[in-house]
Length: 91
Image 1 (tube, rainbow, N blue to C red):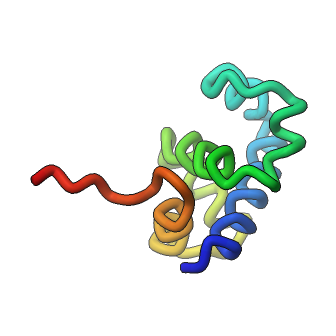
Image 2 (cartoon, rainbow, N blue to C red; image 1 turned 30 degrees about the horizontal axis):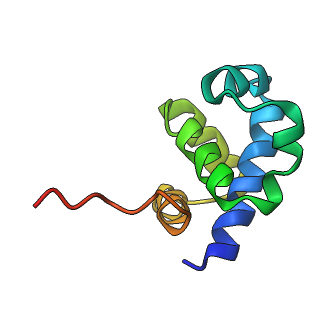
């Protein structure tokens, strides 16, 4: 997946977070303030953090995927395409 496509998925996930009344939880979890959230479109690392946050709860992943008509695999590919989303190599 191209990073641009992953960023769109993450921005839509951020909108879902706000609509699901999870924005305060996101802020508490990440330490990100509202001004930084407004700048999220220009920060691929923050967008990766958005997807990491969603992945903390299976129901949230399902909600985001339903809202965007995404397969779970596509959601995971989006996370992998953003900074910090690469699978670690343990060897």
